[in-house]
Length: 333
Ligand SMILES: NC(=O)c1ccc[n+]([C@@H]2O[C@H](COP(=O)([O-])OP(=O)(O)OC[C@H]3O[C@@H](n4cnc5c(N)ncnc54)[C@H](OP(=O)(O)O)[C@@H]3O)[C@@H](O)[C@H]2O)c1
Image (cartoon, rainbow, N blue to C red; front, side, top):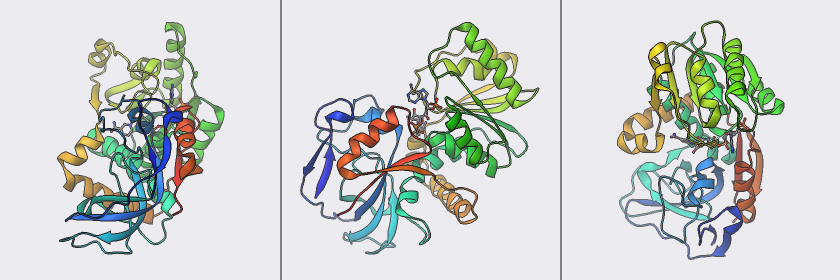
């Protein structure tokens, strides 16, 4: 089968497509014939050895897949050949066939395309865990989403609306803000795309306050970091919750005095670890997300697809800040 492999640390241009042996299922495993692979920011990091996990090389990136169960190993119950499923192996997904533990696959409804399914778990899983379990977002509260047109950001916009919040979307271009407004955001603003000095940060904080309303944001969803963090923290309401999700713009330092002045909680979000520590809570969240999909409250937006041979270009496009919603790699075997 064909596999996209990282053989040396580096950018997407270092990835190669090679023929490798097909996997066979061990006891408790299933083989998924992969149809679509969701691309996520961690794919840009893992191939450069900059992610929390460092798999042994050669390895394939690709954290989440959708496909059809092709074979089941000994002792597998509840999953059958022919089932349409999704799985989040973390890496290893940019291949034609993939072995995963049977208990980790989740069935998908007939109405859901493989492209949509491959764009569902990581972004909506992360954002739902962040908003529901970590921030305990309540209906009527104001949610400010940074990077609101990216993968996890767009999911946070839709989920924030589904949970009854007033959602303010912030992003670096007019197209991105328009996209977030189409997803349901109540209000939007464009922020500068490059680094900011103190004066520009102060100005941005004022814009955040204007867009969120007189009292500021109850919850900030920050999957961007960098110079955007300080202005967002300054634009928070009393008892605010600041969600630390990711740092494409750099790891910021926060002045802790600001958290004291408004009784703000800074809350870390590590969805992958939470899934491993509490698989039952993860399963419950996934069931709720599937119900929201069935009710038409959420729908992953796939703005661009690439074939398996061009997976490196897909990862490059995402790293270059080009994604609106999700980029997906499709696999034809
Ligand atoms: N904590 C967790 O459990 C968890 C789970 C999944 C992902 N994440 C993290 O969440 C972040 C977003 O992931 P994603 O898959 O949603 O990525 P994505 O689709 O590429 O979105 C990232 C957004 O960050 C913004 N950005 C600002 N500065 C950037 C820069 N220098 N380079 C690239 N993007 C920049 C871009 O929006 P603008 O152009 O509008 O600024 C972009 O839309 C990543 O840091 C990822 O590692 C965390």
